[in-house]
Image 1 (cartoon, protein in one colour):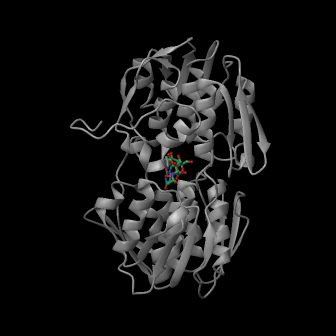
Image 2: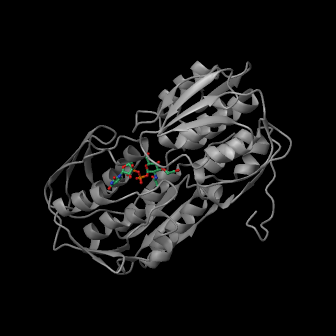
Amino acid sequence: MRISGAKNSALKLMAACVLAEGTHVLSNVPDIADVQLMAGVLEALGMTVRRGDGGVTEIVRDVPLQPEAPYELVEQMRASTAVLGPLLAAVGEARVAMPGGDDFGARPIDMHLRGLEALGAAFELDHGVIHGRTDGLRGAEIVLDYPSVGATENLLMAAVLAEGHTVITNAAREPEIADLAAFLNRMGARVVGAGSARIDIDGVAGLRAVSHAVVPDRLEVATFLAALGVAGGELRLTHSRPDHLELLIDRMGAMGIRVSPDGDGLWAMRRARPRPVDVATLPYPGLATDVLPLLVAVLCFADGTSFATENVFAGRFGYVGELARMGAHIKVEDHHLVIDGVEQLSGAPVRAPDIRAGAALVVAALGAEGETVVLNGEHIDRGYESFDRKLRAVGADVERLADDTDGR
Ligand code: EPZ
């Protein structure tokens, strides 16, 4: 089964296209709702986005930019704030609606703004819109309080056109950051150290439009490995990067799910009932917060008690009540879960609270007796390309139901 390009890279690569005039060509871009939303943001700025076949997307900047990302798009997708740094760097001004909270609770962007201020931008909040201006960004030494993915990316995209040298310390190290830096360097930027905790950037006078292939989606890989963890059997996932999932593969090994590199992807197998393990999320190379709902879905079937800890997003347990509706035994203790595995869950109507939790409910349903209906499936479509078709391709009995009045 072919893994798609990573949502969490594609969205930032699209935002980075703001930095240079001309036609950029991105390939391996997943066909998902969030990519369409980011295309809408770029079109609101005055750019043109043309999606071709096979995940090839052309992004054209050939007219003066309107530096405003509208509220109706930002409130649907926080990642719209990724245009803040590129706009300030490219045209010295940015108006981006202040993103509200979402399913995970408060998700401030204070580190983005503080870092951009250090680079020479000034901000004011104007009726819910962040209005940033600069008469020219200048390199700076920035130390992040926390290795925030979004802040690292926004500062990186701003610093590549800033005058002088910038250092980002305690930077996020996710593979999507390295993918963004590779794209920026292909455009003519001078970024060193992406993927490590220290990134050095020497600003350049200008960048050019180029082509780039989006890195494979490690979170989609994790989702299909979790599906295997619940349903058992064997799986080959092509166009994937097992080296981006070392800790997950280690944890899966402890659960009895064997995973090994295979050609341009990986092979995996599960025979016996999963074993219980303890898992805790941390910034990369720690276990990604996005895979925890998927692991918890597998551990609901484990032969014993597991402990799961969420350290990145305080309020990310919206799926626990839905799993309990299917008969899972999970106790919530602050940001910890105690999961007593059961032989089988039972099918039930459940509601997806967000992208990864929605996928986790579908994964759990693969091991449930009877039918499960996952409502608010649009959350899943935000982050997964043809999820139902791909699951059927590996043997799952999954069907997409037409929308109806209650959003089914
Ligand atoms: C990115 O979100 C991903 N989204 C998330 O994936 C992922 O869960 C997250 O990184 C962590 O890996 C995209 O790339 C589009 P952060 P981001 O800034 O950038 C706090 C998915 O399902 N923080 O690393 O928003 C923040 O509240 C999504 O694909 C501040 O306090 O994450 C959180 O607790 C969900 N102030 C922590 O840092 C700031 O200025 C990590 O956030 C920035 C962040």
